[in-house]
Length: 553
Image (tube, rainbow, N blue to C red; front, side, top):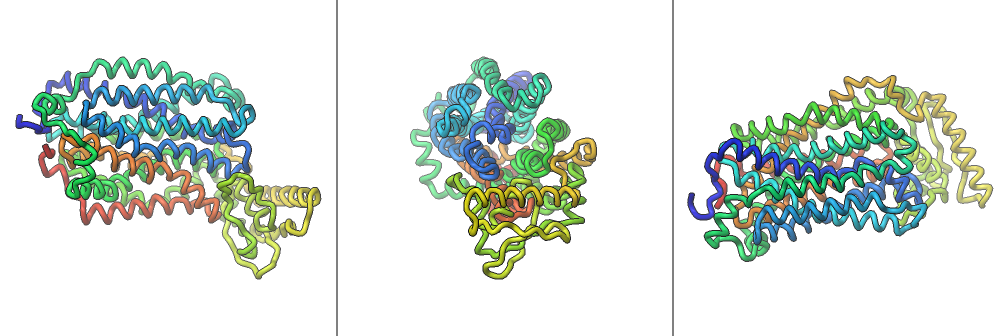
């Protein structure tokens, strides 16, 4: 093999299987740690953000979820550099330790009721540590497996690493479902949510033991033995325009779209079921778990297929299909999961009629706005909390707001003209009348799982997961093949984690903020659709098909 070459000879099947299994199992446990928070966001809203109004609290909880994603690119820079300087194996041992202990510590945190604002601050700090660790983990695992793979099977081999994010989420679902079943929903919401976090210390021990059995990547070992490893990975990766250009194309022409499709198909779908469709958490978890179980084998299929027809066309096709079908799929999902809500929205649509100057965006970054200063705020705060989709209608300046449910118009109290406690009484009276009117119009307080079309809902969720497998299955092979071995860990980690950490990780926060501001429960889908279309355009114009070339040495 030529010096610095990354084209591996066909290794023994048993050896390859052990490399893939060890790398994949360790990575599954890391994803389990990272995604516990996202899975329990609704409960953690109550535990750590109960000091603000409910809508803002949920967005804050999603923002804390996104905090771990925010620092992932920084983790990619730090640990990617270390991985290119000292090796793949030792680097992801360190990241695993940080991830495991940070997750365990979440299970020990006091709640907002106990510690006040210190509780969410500590939670965010631990999320930041998790994000830093994960920023250094994925690039190492993907690079490690890819550097054991021959050219014609790199997509197939690395696709097993691609299953780990979904399998980690699946493992999280199983642990959460099992705990909920064992102790009951009330106990789980009160204290049982801590159990999956605390159990991660056991997974950490298993993961570290598995990873300790691995040897260094043969490609990296050969570079080390021949003295050709990079002495300045960051400078070589990002100070050289030729390589930086490829980093930017990889980010905007592949990873950004992959990321929003991934997080829409798995996390946003889950939040949509629980928060918007008012489906109980247990049932929502079961449905997502079934869809993941049905869809996960297609990660390997599309990885295998990318070895034959190319990575680029599969990834861009997945982005395009998602962008074209998200709106009809989520509308159909709503009708399947909460048919009573779908019927009510069709028969008696809700409109908020108000003077636009009287209305605030239903999100308060400070967390102290009660949205009770103006009549429009009173109406929108109520429907936002109820998860009701509504349209806006402008009234003349100075007109009091109205909540219109079908043909029934309910005037809102002129909050600005009332003082406490009269204002509080007037708002309470309005909310009672609005609740009664919504009930009369057929709007359910919660989804009734007995009325849901579960087979159809699971089919839709499985389609969303299939899009995920199309964009995610080949992405590791594509990224590995774009960059030379001496700076590969650093080069591929940054676009991957900017894409998945920022474009994908912030998706739930951005999407629900759009919904809160707009009122339409489907408006948040515009974010992943726009990003996915942007990726298709840039990918077609600028991204080369790496499968057609030897991996750069």
